[in-house]
Length: 104
Image (tube, rainbow, N blue to C red; front, side):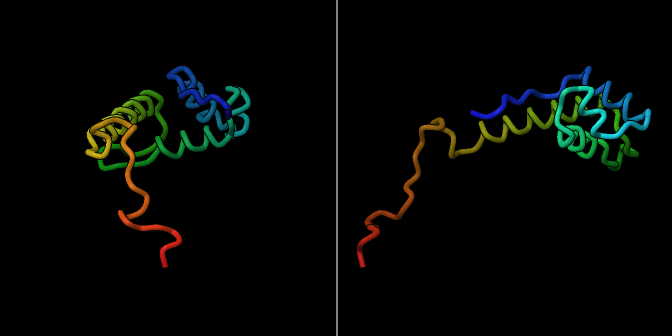
């Protein structure tokens, strides 16, 4: 299979904040945490955006709260969708009834 993915921990987010505030590059931060530079870049990009109530900038506790909210919202979305009411074993027909690939 592929690599096992693990969510960033609060401790890792605090370390990202500290190193980023010290002016370290994303690659240096990634090497220090044993993570991909893309993971660090994505973390800083997703959790640093300014909003109506947030002036912007990376803050680790806020980043963790946003992550928890995204994770909860995603799970609720899938569970509440009518297509998944009977579980993931539900099979939708790929083709309309009566359709055959060699029927001309």
